[in-house]
Length: 431
Image (cartoon, rainbow, N blue to C red; front, side):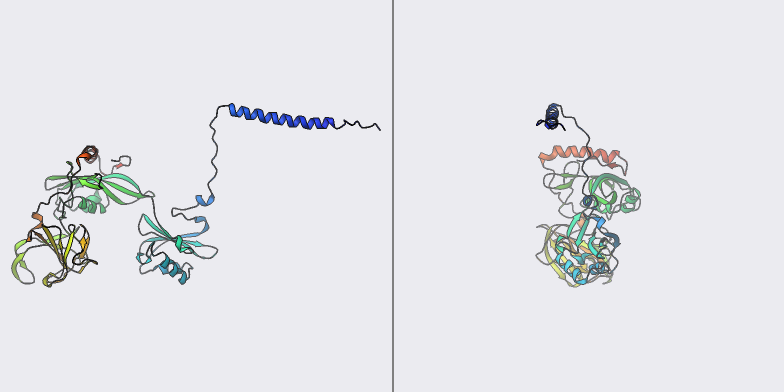
């Protein structure tokens, strides 16, 4: 057998060293080449989002972990009723209601509102209950960890739409015929509350309005604010434009005068005048003629009565023929009275400060009265007068430094009012 040379392993070692050297040189060449070449954008798939994030629903709950069912609150159902049938012990319901009182008072749950239950299939009981008090807000009740309960809001999308027409019967019906929702009538009456007596609108009156239509998940949930409008009443045209003058959004006419007055035209939103201010009216109870220095509004018992302006309550109690009666001093000139109320609103007492539009009582038939109505009294400098005979001064106009911006807004909105068909959408236009 031949003797092995002491260098017999050299070829193998040289091979390994050569391979290593080639690898190092190749890596270095590749690195230098890559660092000196211009960067080229490439399309790389983004890493997938965590499964739990993808499965979260609109209320931030991982729906894949639970059995989810939709319900509506039935008449006379309580918060406990909603959860007891979902496997939650009564003690847990009481603890949840108590610890979430600052988040949402469960006593405010109303019949007809929708709610969603997330039931743990392994434990066979509810983990979450999501209650929706309206189309936007929701309350997430965490049964296991009450401190994690929270209130949220669904995102609301806004688009501008128009509505209008000529009144043939009522403002409500005309709005419905134009494709708008009847709630818009209330919005419109509030904008022109100081210019137009909506108890006296008549056939042939015309109007056009640009308003915000609110949607959640593509479903219309009702009108938002009015952006601009005009109303032709008894041959006179009134304009309204919403504008933020630096102190908040207000409504102004085309010349920049505020539409807001010191006092509202009427203390009720919608009703009818059953008797006007007069010095000679036949009294249905006393059976004789006597002055009636007030305006009667026929309305159902319980209809909210609002203060026509900011002021201080002078009187709030039962007073003989007047029944339940509230009297408000608005300033050194004007005072108003509200008679025959079924009851006076909570917190309304002498010395109370009230805001314009605040509910101070409810229509009734207390005192010397033959049926539910509001007897509204109006005094100027201590003398009873007809409120519909008074021309009230306007509030602050658009400040001079904002008039250029206001004029630009008016020019754009005026074109919308006059030249666009009802129900057209203006999702991209903003003032």
